[in-house]
Image 1: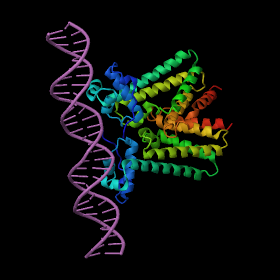
Image 2: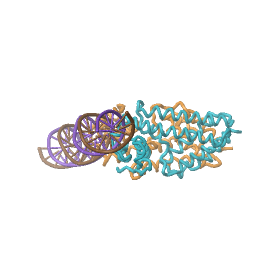
Image 3: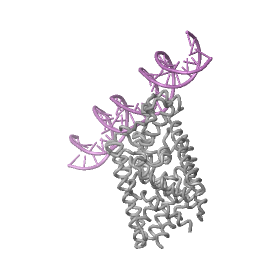
Image 4: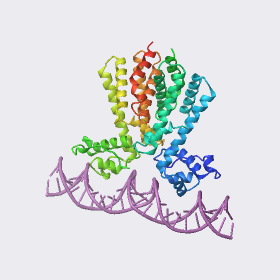
Length: 200
Length: 200
DNA sequence: CAGGGGTGTTACCGGTCAGTAACAAGCATA
DNA sequence: TATGCTTGTTACTGACCGGTAACACCCCTG
């Protein structure tokens, strides 16, 4: 089972510190091939280094996985911040921007859903260090969505947020089984209908 | 990483033919621990037999995985048939029954989401024999839902079906990251609101 | 009784897994 | 020039992976 990999600019650049190169290579391989499908040796090779250096920066593969997810959670937080900065005082526009970005992400065939959700499916062990990261991230995601729905003046912000949350989560996972042209392609329209129903 | 396993009645019963015991053991282990996390030796042992007998009934582990998913797809088909038989000529009741069953399934902490969807995440290789099964199953699932929504007289049956489809898919996957007490616990209420909106 | 198909047992194959020990080489600072 | 830190290299461990060969066994049918 040959793994697919891309030559990432960061991992090819030997100017970048090895820890960053390893994380970049691991992110790429984990996301596209699955966490369990990727060995540490392949990660080190893709990062232009070797297994020893990898283990000098990460205590174990599980810790590398946790850090990989931590980075993605941070990126998502920055995306939310960017939305808020782009539409200050306009929660409705922020919500609209979020929906549009999510639909674009779902339709993109290069994407394979939410890395955090995928990891939760792939790593059912309750004591895996990645689980803390996943649970905290998803809870924070939901909280932000609830706050945003509340700011728009929806009648039941928490219910609306959960509807949108499930809609998105379903779109991202179903794109991998029925394909991105299926139900997931009308995410914006569905979301707008939900929002409208709660603003009456 | 010790695997969790249950002593299934069928796998403990040596009266049952070995092929069925193997499938039962594989279903249990695959679903709870993930497909890649389970080795064929562990499956054979849980089925009360050995690796050789397993390979006399299944050409490879990948084929065993495909058959495991085929069985589940068949079970789901029977569930739909049962719903239709329980509420003949009453699509509204069938839809309601489907929603209730899905919420019960999502809330059950023993469950770990849709085995087919999980497999799609765990097995991204396009040529894996399981992918055909997954894609056909999800497409059939969606078709049945569309037909049912159409029979209820919804104004846009396909859109409603996709909304319900994504809602369910999201609920099952998010139960594994935010837990079953989160957004997934109000699936019936959300679904009913969607249906009502399309029956106006 | 003879035959044969399904099953169990053991040992093995080559390969990969996560993780480590020991040592050489580079490179900066002091 | 000498120090000390980071990295590279090679080789290795013990375990497990999917899959197979060879052979003994049991039980049912003829």
